[in-house]
Image 1 (tube, rainbow, N blue to C red):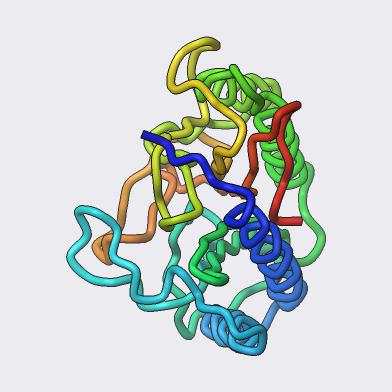
Image 2 (image 1 turned 90 degrees about the vertical axis):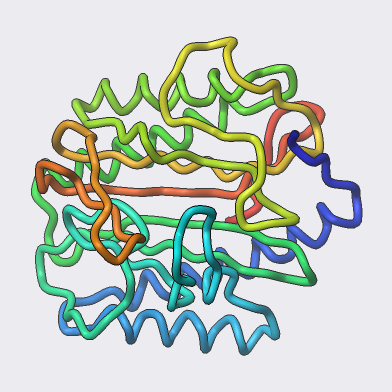
Length: 253
């Protein structure tokens, strides 16, 4: 069951979300040809440490996974959809790079992700990135009291399909705050009126993932990196969102 956050917890989440947004913006700005994904990871760690906070992904072990995640940042390139592990891989001109970061501030967790194109993007890549950005905006707009997680998913799916993008269905958004992952499950597709009802004080991570192909994915042997099964380019955007009395509020901006 989704946990309702109290005023004190919401205040902490707002402060942490603001810090996370500022940090990820700096990391995204550093995404350039010639930079390694590990250098981006080290930058994220440095910026989080400077604030006196903790990277929430580092050494986190999701349910069903045998080994802890070995980095603070997820860096997914091209056909990699999410959870790419930083390494000595060098980013190249023309790459599509998604960065995903979690932060623990005063015991509370926030989550944020975005995708950038390195160099001049093609029309297809622009459509992929803009379509996924519009999808998260639609999902956030649908997130309000008495709406359901199915309403959020349906809003996201409608926009992605309108842009001709593949909807990644086996991965989803989630509750966040006391833990890195909490209830409810927040899908990126579905039917209006289905799923869990949303209520003021709930905090959820809304995170559409899309590809230029079918949207089907598979996980690599590292247990973390999901790639598009058809090797098509992918994008990922995520915000931590508070359900308010009148609608919703983005905490990671």
